[in-house]
Length: 228
Length: 297
Ligand SMILES: Nc1ncnc2c1ncn2[C@@H]1O[C@H](COP(=O)(O)OP(=O)(O)O)[C@@H](O)[C@H]1O
Ligand SMILES: [Mg+2]
Image 1 (cartoon, protein in one colour):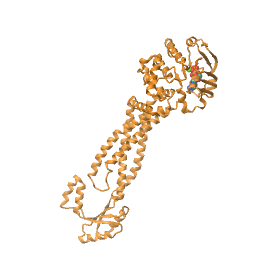
Image 2 (cartoon, chains in turn brown, orange):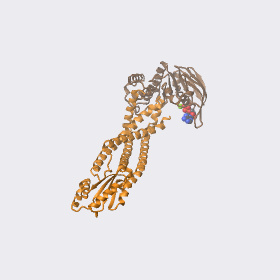
Image 3 (tube, rainbow over the protein chains, first blue to last red):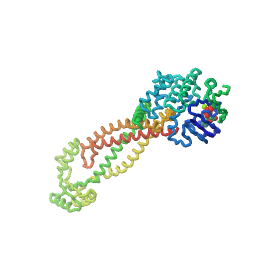
Image 4 (cartoon, rainbow over the protein chains, first blue to last red):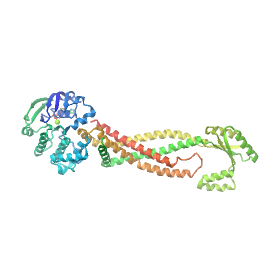
């Protein structure tokens, strides 16, 4: 569960990215965040895993009140949230397998469970045969699937994705979306910022539209609503 | 922390040593250079210190007797010395004995002195022993005033200058060692920092995946420890061989009883341990310092 009340965010350079946001997202929902560039989508998403701290307002994630979250407990928050980035953010010197295993090593999972679970998610994203490759040896779509595998490997309640298909061609994008839908089907909350009108209008889900740091629309089974 | 996590950190630390290639070599070089200098200084300062202690405890005064004195006068002088306060013993040493000792103490070079056997240039002497080390100097000056005494020699006088030097050496040596250690820490943390700059993005990613600072720091700790230990191999080898030869060379030349190096065993071994510890400290500190800044993501 994600709950936000009256969130403001002004960056150090004086730019106000969010201007009073309220949001309530239930466990298992699939939500698109849409809006023009600079609207505040990424800022909204970064609040959830505390890459960004709000200037004002209340955020509760999985019953954790982020206002009271201590610095040293931030890793605990992040272990329950899988994050997928537009630029993948894979560790370049580690193999596909090691990149995914890393998310389990930090929670001190046993090597046996790590092996089992990593192979499971590699199977899910269809990359079992590329486990020993390093990220540079993969296509963009494959790298993104590795980062999705890493995001879901420790069974997080929430997976958030910031323009995950932004760097991918349409065919690959649809494959990635299929993977997200599968993850969502298992009960994981998905929050995804996107610029893809086709995706939002085809795979119908809840749509939250942000403009100028405000939520201007929040519809179930909504449309993209912009001319792309 | 679980044991398997510790194993993982060890593995990662080892891997980083190889992943960083030339930076590793540079860091080890910095530690090696520092430790060689530190080892040399410590060996010097500790030995000078020991010599100073030996000298302070030295109670022998060699009293050279005027060559013009007859046998009876010499005996009288000996009795006179015994009358002085603080004298433990007075032993007569003939000029032939003196020469013999000298020849022996000089080893090979002493052969040359044997030429003097026919025409011994030395004089008879009394070897006076003071009851207390701190009375040696006072007693020596009293003896020097006596009629028929040509000269008095004693350890403290001979090494007074050495001792003076030692005071400075101790301070300068210590300052140099501290300076060197910090230079090495600085060098290491800088070389590692360069490799970390490239890794700062990786550290950021690790944090986003939920790694704690400790989890990220441990492999760096292991890496630093390894750098320090690897960097101390050459200095320790140099110390052990160098000190072995020095010790052998010096003990063959016992010119003065108080000039004696600290014995190879255990001194060289203990110093090696200390060098290893300093190396480990430099490596760990340099490494952990360099990662600190990047953990505030
Ligand atoms: N780290 C930052 N420092 C300063 N300004 C920022 C930072 N991140 C984003 N901004 C600004 O905040 C506004 C919202 O940015 P962002 O949330 O990235 O929007 P979006 O993802 O919708 O394009 C923009 O004006 C952007 O320039
Ligand atoms: Mg953005």
